[in-house]
Length: 115
Length: 113
Image (cartoon, rainbow over all chains, first blue to last red; front, side, top):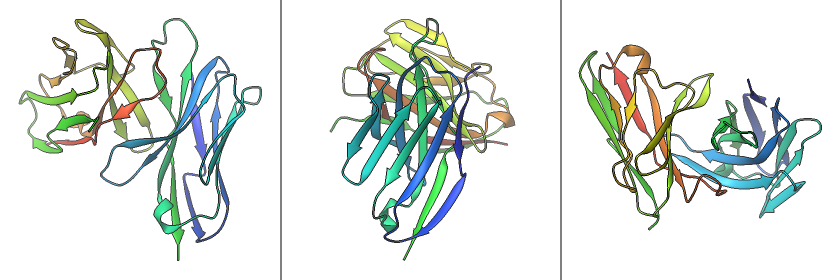
């Protein structure tokens, strides 16, 4: 059974710091990996998607990397801002028959950026 | 605006009283899915639909039903809700099963007492 783990569960950093969020997955037959942001009481917003053939993707201050061999992905946030405070979720989509395009989510990292 | 719309946003109900959570998307997406989110467990897939009249179970389908009579709508039905179905529910869609990006609804917070 595939598992996706995110550590730490919660993180608090002062404004301006660079930070890294971690995501580990057990099944290396990955099709892609997505990072989402979830604000309290809101749905999920897709931030970055990395295909299995890619090593990283960048969008503004965000950079996501993928290492299939070690089963890890990281989300790097540069120059953090209070508006970055949210829960960040990673989700793995497998490239296996029978998985029917399902996403398997981690439990998330709750980030708080303080003034 | 392209979006996935869920209703209601909040619902408190009693054990055993049938309810339906609606989900509608305006993007002509073929693939739709329901997830529930619980503390410590993350999001888990309940049911999904590859296209009209094609539905299948996800990881936690017990106690739920779905239907896909039209491409835009994918309602989630709880025939006899129980307290362990208290959760935050999300509907999501994407263009096809093999497409990359998901669009999520804003969620429905259900409490069963």
